[in-house]
Every structure is written in C-alpha cells, then in structure tokens.
Length: 213
Image 1: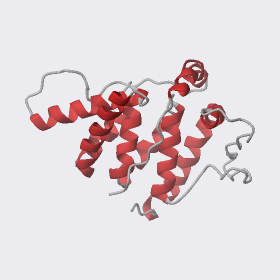
Image 2: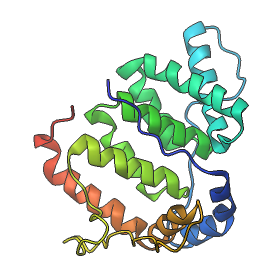
Image 3: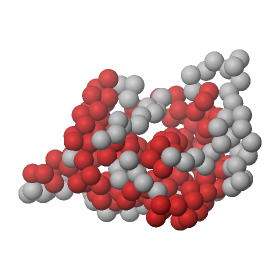
Image 4: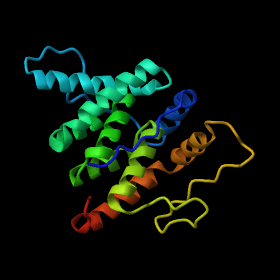
C-alpha cells in the first residue's frame, strides 16, 4: 500500500476560489456532478455501509485543515477509508465523479493515492479539469507517480510535445505562503483543458503496457 499523497490546502487559498471558479466555468470546466451515493443522513441498515457513508462525508472537513478539530476528523476518516483498501475503489471512483463537495473529492484523491489501482487512473484524469485547482494538482502528482510519466514539464524545462509549458518558477523575492498556489492556479486556469487532453491521449496509447505498482 502506497503512502497517501497530501498537499493540504491553505486557508488563504480559499480566497482565490470565487473568481477562479468563475474563470474555469467560462473555460469549459464546469461542475455538473450528480450525486450517485449520497453522503447525507439517509437511513441505512447495513453497518458497514453506514460507516462508509459517514467517513466519506467527513472528508468534507478537509476544506479547512487549519482548524485542528477538522484535521482530526479528516485524518481519521481518511485512515478508515485507506484501511478498506482496494475493496472500495469502485465506490471511491464513483464518489470522485459525483460529489459536489470539493473537500470530499480532495479526500478521495488522497485515499486513492494510497489504495488506487489501474482502475482509478481514468477517474484521476477526469478530475484534471476540476473547478478546484488543488484537486487537479494532487491528481496530476499522483498520476505522475503511479504511471511513472509526466505531462507537465519540470520547472525551467522546455514546453512538452503536447504543448504544455512548465509551471512558472516563483520569484524568490515573493515570500507569501500562498505564492506557489497562486502560480499553479493561474497556470491551471489557462491550461487545464490541454492537461486533461494530454493525459487522456497518453493513457489511450499506454494503458495496456503500463504497470501500476
């Protein structure tokens, strides 16, 4: 089982979301999800199903991990989900594609980073156009590790054959804690469609010969 990949969202990054989401919606990056599995309080009789729903719902706490109480709840839910291993991978993939709560989607991506198999690659590629840039950043990072391949060139390197440029380097004089997040958000706002297409095309050509550790 892989160690989960985490890039915890900083609270300051939330201030960017309203304007950025509007930008991405105009760029064909809308969020038209419909819940497949509800994470609300719908009565269930199966205890395992009830616990699974509760843990998925608790991932929403990941939207504000600067709050220690939220962090405790989020980490516990994530550990519980990871402990179930690949047995819930289909459920995680469906939740990733259907949840309207970006905290839940963020948490699912982190769980898949530890438990995901080849079956989740297309779902991770799918969220490379997520309205929340940090989810796409995590998904791209996980795909890079799982597939031993990268589509975004390393910083300072030439533009990739797909046309994707590297994410710009941060000015060393800029010391703001959210500087890198702002740079990624700006890059993502311009290139999210090309990023998803590049990974989609690569996976179509390499799916059969790619081994996921």
